[in-house]
Structure formats: C-alpha cells, structure tokens
Amino acid sequence: MSLPVFFCNDMVARAQSFSPSAAKPRAVVDDWLRRGLAIDIRVPTPATIDDLTRAHDADYVRGVLDGRIPNGFGDRSIAVASSLPFTSGAMLSAARHALQNRSITCAPCSGFHHAGWDHAAGYCTFNGLVVAACALLADGASSVGILDCDMHYGDGTDAILARLGLGGAHGRVVHFTAGATYSRRNQARSFLDRLPDIVGSMQRCDVVLYQAGADPHVRDPLGGFLDDDDLQRRDQIVFRTARALGLPVAWNLAGGYQRDKSGGISAVLAIHARTAEAAIDAARAPIPRVGDAAIFRAP
Image (spheres, rainbow, N blue to C red):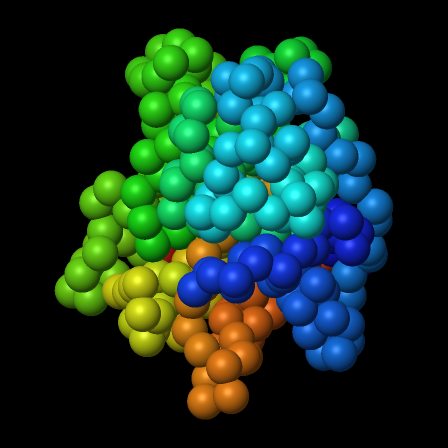
C-alpha cells in the first residue's frame, strides 16, 4: 500500500527567508523518492478564491495574490503568491481523499497555522488548515479535527475558528495545538502519554488534519522538547490510534528549521521521512486495538 502524496511543482517557490518552507515540498518529495518510500504522487487541485475566502478576508486574499499585501515571509513575491493556492489546495485535496477513502494521506507543505483572518505571520500566509476544514464542512462533513503538533501555538487557527464560530467546546472543528502547552524537555513523557487521548477526543470527527512538525526536535533552533525517538513515537501514536478509531488522517509537514553545515535541511528531511514511514507502516499494519497499551503508550 502506497501513501497518497498530493504534490506538484506549482506548490514550490523561492523565498529569501530563515524558513525553508516555500521550497520544502520539492525537497521532501525528492528525498522520499531517493529513499524508495512507497508513495503515490497525485496532483492537487488548487484552492479557489471561494475556498480561501471562507477562511480569510476577501481583500486580504486578493491583495496577497496580487502582490499588494506582504506574505508570511514579509515580501510581496508573486512567485510565493502563485504557490499559495496550491499549498492550501494540497491540504484540501489530501483531506478530501482521506475522507472519501478512509485512509492516511499527505500534503507535503507547511506555512499555515500562524496566518490570521486578514494578516500573515510567522512564515504563514493562508491558513490551509482552516481553508481545508471550512471546505470540508461546506462539502457536508459534520466535524473536522485539527491536531497541531508543530512546536508553536497555532494562534492564527484559533483566532479564525473563534471568528467563524467553529471552535470551542461546541464547535464543528476540534482543535488541539501542542504549542499552547508543551515546550520543555521534561514534558516529553507527559505529552506522549496524553497523545492517545487527544487523538481520541477527535473520534467523532469525519477526518483529522495532522500537523507533523519537525520543529519540536530538541536540536531545532526554534524548538524543541522531543528527541528522534520521541518524534517517531508521536507519529506512531497518532497514525495507529487514528487507524484503530477508524479516523482518516491528512497530514502535512509544518515547521522545521535545523540546518546542516552546508546550509541544507538534511536533519529536517530525515524527520519528515520518518513521519512518512510511520504513516505507511500504520496503513499497512493490521488495525490495532485502542486498549493495547504496548501500541498506544510511550514506553
């Protein structure tokens, strides 16, 4: 069984930035192909103006796309602007496929959760998580889960959901952002122990959008509280618990800022590859039982 990966070169742009996210989709997919991972590359449908304006102010959307309003990298690059409908579109395409096929899918992109209703922030321009969630609800989904395991608080996601009346205890989007609670190394065990219950809190959702960030790594310059084994365990818990509950999952790359001596992102690529391996393994394995402590709890 191969992992459906929603990717096209239109998702990729060059940005003069500390964050590698604009160019990361191509680097990640190339790395997975070099590693021989079982992936099935599919072309995403770009997000439409209607898709984007469900989650953002219409003037903001048009201003960014026209190059009049700065994007999340702080410039007005038309190349970056042109890629944005495809990154949000990849998230939505992956989510729709996961929901329709009760499966695990991937959108190899990032730069979502700090984007607010009418502004960019923190390398994020359009909030592809909320764009996807709103489109799925418009399609007829009852509820959507957003499981944000990036290092940082998904403030833009929270703010947009509150504005739209979709968040909170009785909202149609169940949102958990690890960055609101977890940041210290001594919290790793408590995070992993709690994670099965967090996934379980989304059991009634039609699909879960999972931000599998690489920046919680202890060596990330903007991280971090999880080591290699912890990150691998995080991904195993998410995918296996979701599979046991019958929850479709569409995941993305989220953050990751480590650089090697040559300026490359080899450490980040390795983390994302392990996430892909965990997704593939979970999809291939027999459906586990929710009560199996050996599978769902940190060792």
